[in-house]
Length: 262
Ligand code: DAK
Image (cartoon, rainbow, N blue to C red; front, side):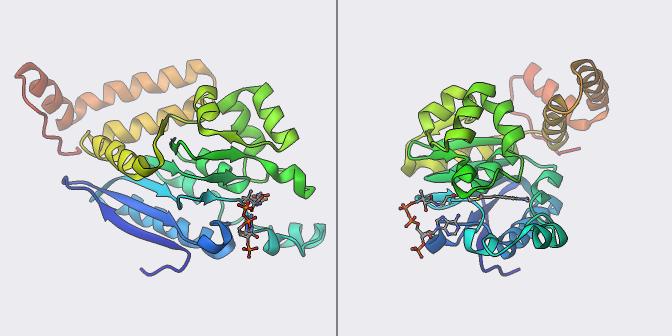
C-alpha cells in the first residue's frame, strides 16, 4: 500500500515486529486532513490485522507530532455544512478500533487534534522538546476529538481547564508530572526508546497484551466493580493458554519464556 501523507514500515528483530507509522506533511507541521486521517486509519487496521505485528508506534517529525486539524480545510465551513458533511468526523476514531497497543512517540508540537490523537494512543513517550496544548479556543472553536474529555481524565480538572481555557502549551516535563506522558526522553532518542518499548511488548504473550489493553480501556468506561469482575474472568481464561504454562514453567526453570501467542 502506498500513502501520500504518512510513511509506514516494519521495525524490530524479533519474531513479531513493530508497525511504525510516521505522519508526513512536514510543510504543514503534520496538520491532520481527511486524506491523512484516511491513510492513518487504513495503516492502523492493516497492522492490527497482521499476525506478524505485535505493537504499533505512531510518530511525527522532530518539529511536530501534529499541529492540529488542518485549519484552511476547516475555515470555509458554516454550521450547516459542518453538520451535514460531518466535518472531519468520519475517519477520526479508527485508532480506537485497534486491539494492539499503539504508542505515541511525540516530538515537537502536539496541538489540538494532534494532542487528541496522541491521547487516543495507549501511552505517550515524549521527547524533551514536546509541547502539548488544546489551542482551539484561539480559533473561536472548541476541541472536537475528545480533548475536553480525555485531557481532564489524564491531567485532572484544574490543569485541563487551564490548558483548554488559556490555550497555553505545556512542555514535556509538565506533561509527565501531570500524568499525560509516560516518560520523557532526549529528542534524539525518541524513536529508539519508543521502538524499544514496543519490542519489549512484542516479546510478551499476545493474548495477555490484548487483554491488558482492553481492561485498561474498560477502567475509563465503566464502574470499578465491573472492571474488576471482567479482569477476574480474563485472568482465569488465560489459564487456558499455552503461554501461561510456558511463562510459569520458564520462571520455575530459570529460563527465558518462548511465547507462542496462543
Ligand atoms: N493547519 C494547517 N497548517 C498549519 C497548522 C494547522 N493546524 N499549524 C501550522 N500550520 C502551517 C503554518 O500555516 C505554516 O505554513 P506556511 O505559512 O509555512 O505555509 C507552517 O505550518 C509552519 O507554521 P508556523 O510558521 O506557524 O510555525 P511556528 O513555529 O511559528 O508556529 C505553531 C508553530 C504550531 C505554534 C503554529 O503554527 C500554530 O499555532 N499552529 C496552529 C495550531 C492550532 O491552532 N491547532 C489547533 C487546530 S484546530 C474533530 C477532530 C479534530 C479537531 C476538530 C474536530 N472532529 C472529529 C469533529 C481538531 C481541531 C484542531 O486541531
